[in-house]
Image 1 (cartoon, rainbow, N blue to C red):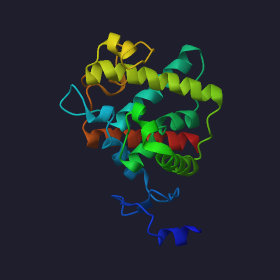
Image 2: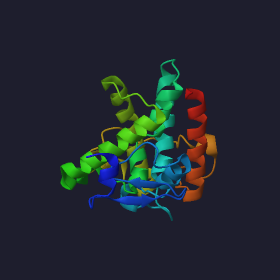
Image 3: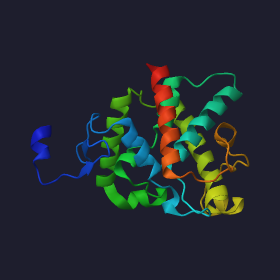
Image 4: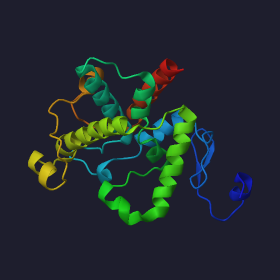
Length: 216
């Protein structure tokens, strides 16, 4: 079935973007959103089921910046620089969640079934095509997952309110949480405080623009 035929088929899930572009979540293409749509979607999509010890929850946009900076710091620690395209891939590692408007708590994902997994893979593929991202090598993906888990452990303690012992024994995250917020030295403010959606979107979009320029 061609794309046009599919779009006339009852099985569709349209999203109208703030830019007035239209995205069919079941049949996405790389041309169905602009960067500001993605930034705002990620800024309005929340981690940890939307729960937080702060007045507002933590956005996926802010988390994505944290992971990117953690990967950059890990590279610098061994005397290398994280290439702009690799940094862009880190920044966009959860981009499909901003298009979907949903960040599923990880242990629940298997219960959503193969259909949901296929949907997220299609969205991720559209993101990789749009931004010219190379697919992960096993070594790169392992390094990414380490940064992602480090961010998660730290968020669990400083944003949600779990203890470090609970992170290890209840959440089963074996990476020790950080004390220092890696974004505080860059943006200031109160360490670990979740940003308001407009600010999270602005900062994400600024970084996205910067890395796109460097990767061109």
